[in-house]
Image 1: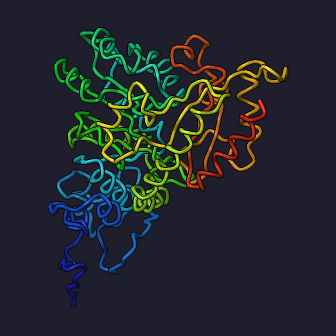
Image 2: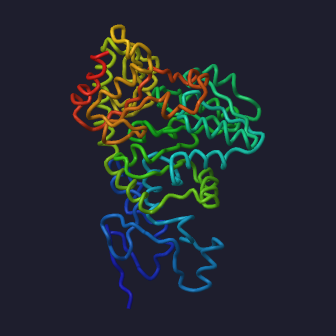
Image 3: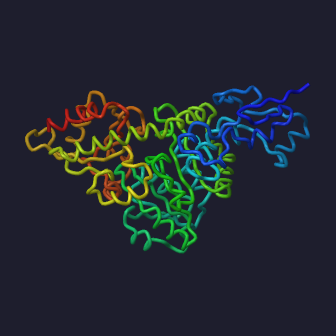
Length: 431
């Protein structure tokens, strides 16, 4: 005889839970819950085992009650899992939770952040279309657009992310997607998402915003008018540099197109990685508050140091996008924790009398900060973009993106801010 169980006051009948488990959520999202509650509880459905923590479904395939049941799942007349390249309960939990945090109808998880960007291209662009993007992008994104999308007939052009007039002037009759990062990599520059949304709606263009640096803890681009949000979940959504993953968030219709690409192309997220990201989301808001608090302190140190010529960080009151960032970011004093700063060549030491050698000296003088190209980690990381993340770009392309030889990118972690400042001072003080 089957038994009926109740978990969190929701009755569950284990004899009739295939479709229900697909739809049910442990948190009733029609109620007005805050972001932290959503981050901890949304997206999960409980099995008839009654588990409290989210399980990891390490399975490639699924079992059906009969041949007829299997056929119904495959032809879509019955909702459920078919194959883990298509759907997986652990991945679905992460997707549901992230979609709830971004105020999106649906999320689609991918194997990496670049996998999410590739999915966006394959879902929304075809030969003859025009992709309009910001100059200030991650180097691999530019490489994907220029090397592969152009190869398959997509026209690509770039404008300064902060120049609204340039965006408007660059729109063409065949422009189908406007793509930007806000904040951008590595200069943490800000796009006017509201302006871009109006521009896109007036011209029947999709607005895609990479929200990797801000995360929904600071900014929700969909609320500002974007159509699709992109994430490298590898960064802050995990927060500890453990696994790779990406995601797209938007309307159900747009995400169905993305899902079809992921399903057909095999750009799917692994169940274990999805579980790691789901647990990471539980502390996202708390971590981002701590990241931002320390980043504000570090930026103030850098801007006052005589060996630093420029600090690219919208949290500084004299930054040209400070007011815009304040308006777009809903966390008070939350401007992210990524910043670029430019180092002056030494006037007293011939070993560091050019921008590159001076920047390398600052990086190499650190004893605690990790020299790595990853970011969004609990550990502070530092890198030289011109010779790492953007080294494949031509000198001209790097110049257009503002990636100079003296530029250092810093991802402020969760160590004591004073210790981060002391570590940076070792090299800066000795130039």
